[in-house]
Length: 267
Image 1 (cartoon, helix red, strand yellow):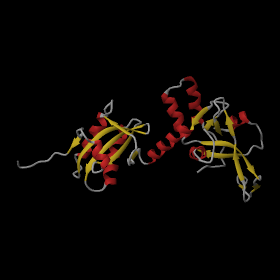
Image 2 (cartoon, rainbow, N blue to C red):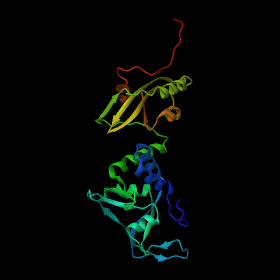
Image 3 (spheres, rainbow, N blue to C red):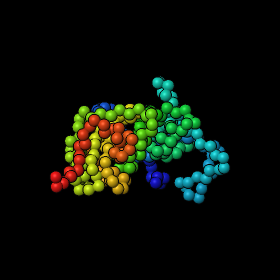
Image 4 (spheres, one colour):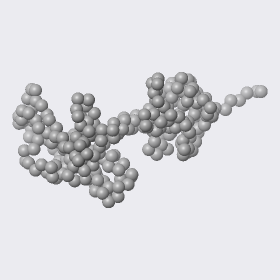
């Protein structure tokens, strides 16, 4: 919930942008992305007709059929970008007017605007006359998907549509600690027979693919494995499929399980 009684400030994001100017490392870029995804931005708009005043000084009454137009800037690369300012000082670098109409937007708001099929935006820019950090449409799509994954604990049950191009193989850097942790967990799960690991590349995105041979409740099995794996992902995604599926069986051809339940018999 946005508290309109407080001025919009994003000190951590402003600091991260400033530090990236001195050290444009992957770590700093990720820090900016994380801050942007939880920030509140000031965005200049034109509201027509002008809203009526409300009894509450921080509220306005919009008339029927009111239109809200968002300002767009075009950069030297011919990208059309929505404007997102971290604070009023940054907004005034663009337009210094006491009567400037604005809305407070979140990352999700900007995502919806950029990805709107009826729009023609190429992304949005944070502080175009300051740090000038651009989020392109393709990057926004990837971040939206990542945020949705994080909301689910970083784990998604993978459903691969027929004819979808998928590449599978063993990870170049094998996640030994994650595999050991999952194996230790599965030793206490009598309903799990085996588990396999592949590296999956689908639509340009990499993830660990865990195929599990089990009986019982799928969601319960997957959720428990997810919680164990979470501490070892190091920025990677993890997807899961049941072994008892066409994709699961095909994905495990010619590979050995990293975990297999031991069976004991008299002979």
